[in-house]
Image (cartoon, rainbow, N blue to C red):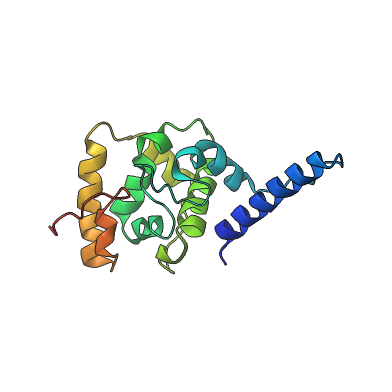
Length: 172
């Protein structure tokens, strides 16, 4: 079980115990301990991408066991950091944002993250977030990056489907 699945299990158990103990008149159960990166993810991203990175059936890209593939190439790494919600994040501290993104790609991304992938750094985040993508640039860039990941990094062809239920795209 990876850390993301364990986190969700702990959160679910904590919610259950809190509800059960509150209903019985006993004191609240202790809240689960989250790292700063996990807490930032839940606050900044979890509402749309889901607590475990599985946004289905919402029309939001699924992160769980998929987002790590983007670490296979420099273009993929840049893409993740230039996404508008990352580049314009309320997390102003670049080291803190790097830690959150490392949680996203290595924990939520699970087996999709290449073994030799290096973590994001504060300097890398600072350089890329200043070049945020706008409008259709997000979709056009994703299409080109994913085509390269499928071709060069053995990413599954299903990665071309950014959103749950989206029809598969033809290979480039």
